[in-house]
Length: 447
Image (cartoon, rainbow, N blue to C red; front, side, top):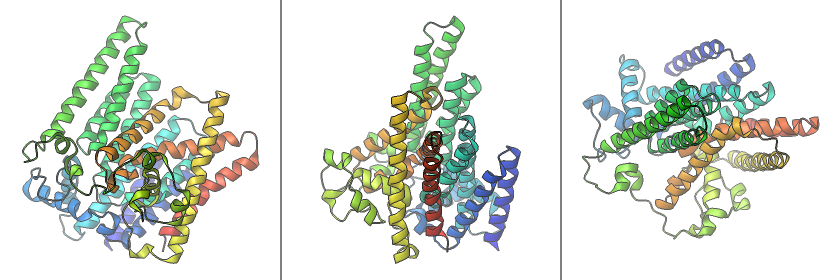
């Protein structure tokens, strides 16, 4: 009954919001269907199966609820994280779980589901602002919704639920500010970036991107009017001062800890343990083992000397870095996982080839898409730096930069749209590959 209540209320809220924002019924339908699949996945898995440290996140929320303060990083496994998500989860627990008839873990998974819906809404706004055609918009939306890691992340009890939403919102508002120059978009981007910093260290990526584009605007207004020049200088200074101040505040939550080294103050418990036993080499970061990628569902290497960053990164974009649980160890799931791996390579290959063709033909609208390209690049470089600094299988996980999935799916949909201009056969082949990913993902998770 609790699960049915959660599903019903969520579907009604989604229907109301999407129709209020005037999205097409075909978009509304796929969002609602994805929610049904996510709640079904929630029904037959435990919090620890959906994320290996789920119990620690629940403990952090309980500590916030009971003591009304930020706990010591030694009170639980993830207590070194900034407190914004956990404070929100504690308030949500007080508001929703007061009667005691909804279990705490279900209530927190419901919060993640609602935050993921916010992520989906921002994705739809991005597709609308980039003026995707109806077919491309539907394909990109469907791929984001039914991507395997989307289904997993949608109901995980984790601060990524809020961090991903804020990072994507920052990406969207930076793009809008870059295109229109409106001050309200700048301050919305600044707010989202600051809140992301107070949620998780992943927020450094969007904060860096905002500063980069503030610098670009400052440089581009050298020959502009004095008013525009002053505005650019003021915005650049505001971005630097606020984001540095919020970063110091986030670090300050750990100032009372016994650890005094910079790594633990900035990145928290991510600096602890689980380091790779084999030294890194350049080959680990540039080589990709296609056969191994297709053959196995998990990202853990059988040979530490063949622990390739790109293999684990790509595989984690599908299934994460930890085993999904006994429910997914059947022969059928292994076969579907191999097919999904092949289709991921097809999607990536087709997108890369089309992008190269468009660059050669000079048909890429850099002004429209450059923010999403730069933000994705910054996020990927931060992840590589994170992995090099702290060699750890959990630091190659795609979920740290999960918002990149949105521009990647949009890029694929635009590739299909571009190829379709010269041939309907090419269009339907590309469209079919995207829909096949969705169908395989549904087959993998649906009981």
